[in-house]
Image 1 (cartoon, rainbow, N blue to C red):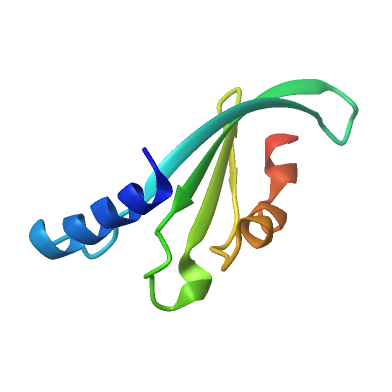
Image 2: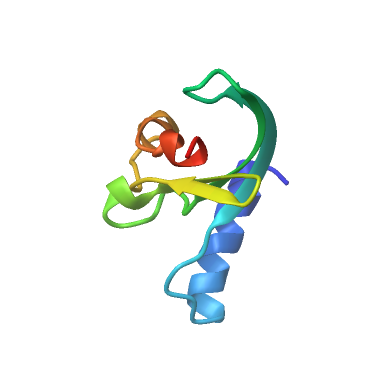
Length: 93
């Protein structure tokens, strides 16, 4: 789905279906090393509320999962901001 179509869908969910919050969710799987140097597989969900979200600093939210552990952070106005804010160390403990 093209990004314009996704944003139109988010708008339609809010207008027609009464959603007050809706996100496009994109998933990735990758590998990282913990602080102890142990390799782990991590599933990441990136939630994008679209360009119309107000305030704009709430647009992106990121969640990460590894072997029953979860990490997240604060919403961010850009994807890099949201990724930097994730408490990745929560996956290490």
